[in-house]
Image 1: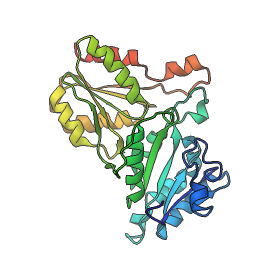
Image 2: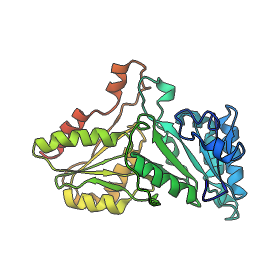
Image 3: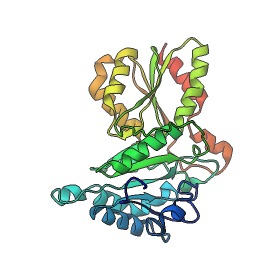
Image 4: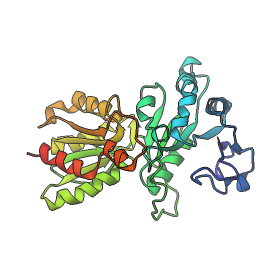
Length: 307
């Protein structure tokens, strides 16, 4: 916002309250109420307003207080945000960022535990990225704001407390590149967001059992970084996908299709995909854990793949 006066923020409680998870803390005092705009509880209205602002040359960052609430703005995100550049014959660019917390938290209930990646992935004209560390959250956010395309940035509700040393010098990450988290030889594990930590926890157990997993945080949910993914598949010849998204129609299903289409001849075993169960997320903590992939399941899946 300091670098570009066209950047503005809008959403519920993003101003003087600093956002429900304090992501925008202190920005209203520094940049004023017009650039950090508190909105009514009307996601369809302020998302549409942000898209209109982007059409006039601003670079809005629209926050959904919870990603599940953005279903109320699905029409604006799909029919306007994703398509206006095309339907206007290229007259308008839509440089907007739509971001907010999502995923399964700790007993937030079904409506507040949504994973909207699967909903939005089929919208033409939109890029999607998911951050998983403080470092890539900052780098991806800056890249998304500077992009000429509409970008949906998925943040996970349980990752806001992570701490990491961030470089003092400026850096911007690519919106279309995966991150090699752990090089390995035996199996490629593709994951993103919170599941990165479940995978790395499982990786410690797997190493103790004699396995050498390669872990990739795909980060770019649309489009996939098929160069990085393909290079890994050609090396390990086995693929396990771990996601918090729903199994039916999720990111894992799309990723499975892409790998099968492009790298089928390099696979020595069928692709395995561990996803959340196709049920509303229960409020009870023990039941909630049962619906989400756990590290022990990842260990078992790798053992089966590498038999």
